[in-house]
Image 1: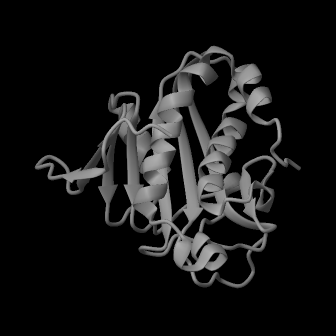
Image 2: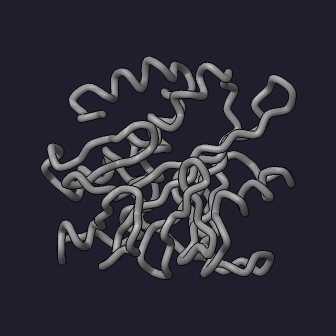
Length: 222
């Protein structure tokens, strides 16, 4: 996959208490801690943040999954990422966003896992590795009457987790548990996610249903 920037670079930003990460069209603020990257990014979006703005955090104190469920977000363990888009999509097209994001994550993780048969997408928003949840997607939209104002795609990936709390709704794993020392760093996973979104987003927006149908070929989905 061709890189649009040599590496992720963390630059000092006097106007925001966090490092700034830039790659391709995306500009991300990397926070040490936040309640939820989706919640914080919605605040920035409503204040006029531009498309391709993102937030990433080392830790979430109130990470959220689908249907208001808690996303286990300990410091340094996972990749907790939210991206802001302002596409011209209808409500009918919007239903494809979660699937598209899941396919992007599936594609990125397959680079590190190697054997794609170990990965699957569990509708509507989970990516599984060896039958266990390794990533989740949370898409949130803001509408003004019948017009989409903005769209936030939240992504949580279990990278360095060595254990999980009891009582999870679905058995979980991490790249570290599944791949051992071959597991990528959070920064490496982030780099590939941003590059893949940058490469495929315009195609998706042009034809959401067609793009998703094409990318689902060969991917185990259930």
